[in-house]
Image (cartoon, protein in one colour):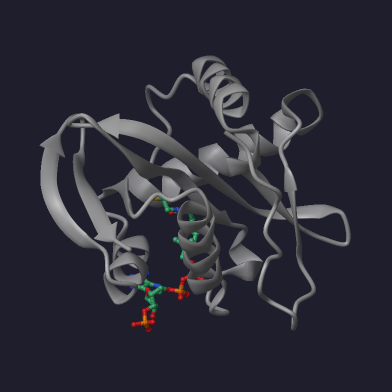
Length: 168
Ligand SMILES: CC(C)(COP(=O)(O)OP(=O)(O)OC[C@H]1O[C@@H](n2cnc3c(N)ncnc32)[C@H](O)[C@@H]1OP(=O)(O)O)[C@@H](O)C(=O)NCCC(=O)NCCS
C-alpha cells in the first residue's frame, strides 16, 4: 500500500518532505532518535540504535511513504514515522515518531506534523490512529491533547508510557 507524498502545509518556512533513504540518512535518524529519547525520559540508557535502524528499515519496506524527513534547503529539520498496524483485529494508523530539531520547536510546526499525519491516514482510508508517548514528555502530550488525542492506557515499562488515540 503506497501513496504519493502529501505536500507539507507550511508555506512560511518553505519545508519539504521526502521519504527516508536508510543508508544515506542513518546518522540523522540516530541523532533524531537519541534526542527524542532524551526529551522523553531524560537519558539514553538501554536504547539499542542498531535494532532501531532495523525497525525503520522494516517500516520502510512495509509503507515507504510513511517514513519521512522534513527538510529546509535539503537539511533535515524533522522526521515523521507513520504506519499501519493491526490493533485488536483492525488496521489502524500508528505514529512511531514525530520529531523537530530544537530550533524548529515552538513555531506551531507540531500541529503541521499532526495535520500531515491525519491527511496521510485518511488518504489510505484509515480513520483511527494511535501513538505512545512517555508520561514525562509533557510538551508532546500537550500537543497531542490539544489536537484531540486521548489517553487510552498506560504501560509501565522502564518508564510510564501513555498510549493515546484519535478517531478521525
Ligand atoms: C513534540 C514536538 C513534535 C512538539 O512540537 P512543537 O511545535 O515544538 O510543539 P509546541 O511548541 O506547539 O508545543 C506544544 C504545546 O506544549 C507546550 N509546551 C512547550 N514546552 C513545554 C514544556 N517544556 N512542558 C510542557 N508544555 C510545553 C506549548 O506551550 C504548547 O502548548 P499550547 O499550544 O497549549 O501553548 C517537538 O517539541 C519535538 O520534536 N520534540 C522532541 C521529540 C519528541 O519528544 N517527540 C515526541 C515523541 S512521542
